[in-house]
Length: 321
Image (cartoon, rainbow, N blue to C red; front, side, top):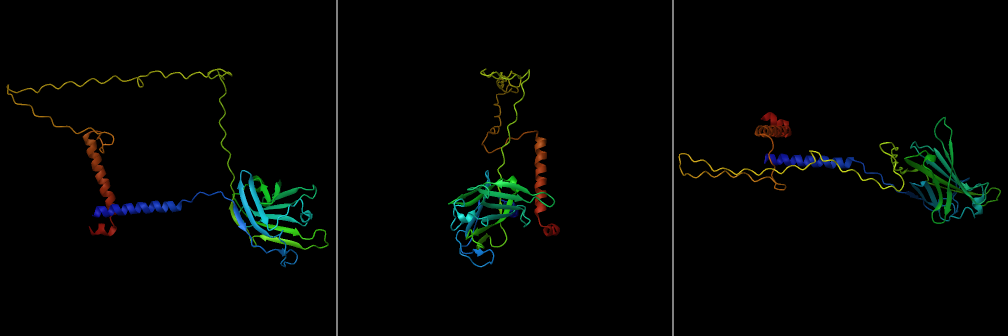
């Protein structure tokens, strides 16, 4: 009963250790787009901070995705007019600003602008400024900018243009000229999130597959094969004493009849039956080695067993004994 309790306690301990190990190991990261929704009706006048009704300015959702194509920043509004055909977007006062923290320090180190090209008519442009660090010049990139009635306003940024971040936090702002051509038009403004940054969002950059090693240069021992020439067959391996077939074992000699003593006709004693040979799946193990080695192995195993049981016995019980 004591042995059974100790074995059960040992099994429970091992199971608990395995369970704890399973909880400690962190699960692998899953690449998935991150989306944030924004309540409707939170547009304000940028100059006065008063509420302002402007559904083309009212952001409803923002998403961040990444992959082979780069880092994709998108957002939608209640009414998303085509910037190329909209007179409001033709105003220099209408633009989008993405502010990104790419190193987790809570500061903006990537500033991306989305607007119409002021020099080329009918062209949407994206411009990124990457503030590398103190005392280092900022890095500028022109990034693709598009509009789609279903997905809204999108920027696609190469990973290295943003400094190859592992994750980003962000906020997006839209400033919209509600009366282009006016002397002092009211500028509608919406920002997501309303406070701070959204994120962090993991950024996934696929790794390129490893290049195949170059083929060895042709030499006198290994000339380059000619075009159209058949590939020579590999030579057959030479027979060696280790690979040659071994001679069949000789049949065992027949047992000789037992000698009789003094001409007596007593019958020989029957031979003691030997143990059945161990075969695969029989459930037994064949003993190997001399009998002394087996005896020493059994004695060592017993000593280890008793030593392990002694360590598992509580200290108080050992002292009492």
